[in-house]
Amino acid sequence: MADITTLSAREIQTKLQNGAVLIDIRSPDEYRREHIEGAVCLSPAQLPSSTDAKIQQASCLVFHCKSGMRTQHAAAQLAQYCAENGKEGFIMQKGLDGWKTAGFQTRINKSQPLEMMRQVQIAAGLLILTGAVLGWLVSPLFYLLCAFVGCGLLLAGVTGFCGMARLLALMPWNKPA
Picture 1 (cartoon, rainbow, N blue to C red):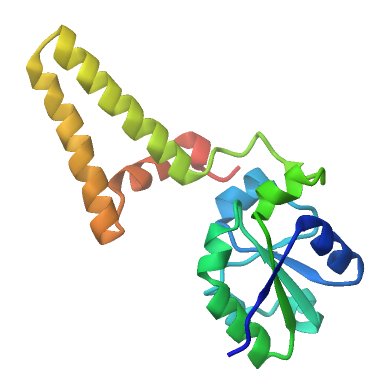
Picture 2 (picture 1 turned 60 degrees about the vertical axis):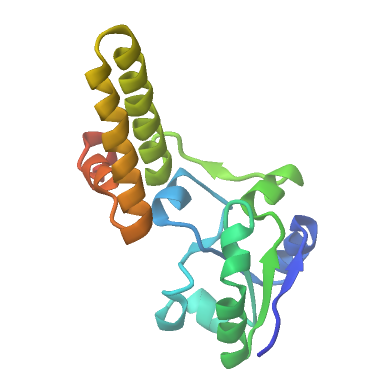
């Protein structure tokens, strides 16, 4: 299997100017909040079945995520796709963070809600902090709230099911307009 090369944001900028297609492998909610202009939002799992004309016609594909970690983890899958479809493939070093560090612009839409994982982290942290403070100031029974949230996070990590994310997805700010 062919390897996929990692390039800096400046090198990627040159590739894009020469017709490469930029593929953002982050989740759609992350993409809607902030993305690089012209990037196509597509997970590695969706890539083989994509009918996007830009991707089909491109000879060069550039992949990125937020920090570069997810893209590196998917590198073998991305390289295989490129090799099977006769495309040159690259990964952007440090992802969206590297793009911004290099001084390039992104399109930010602050009207979009925070990414679901950040919402879960905020809610879990707030519940744990509340349980700890109330357990200390009011009654030790409030420490059970910390234990409950901890068990939920453990369950989410082990099974992949996050009840808090499902609950937060029902909130009005996460509903499409």
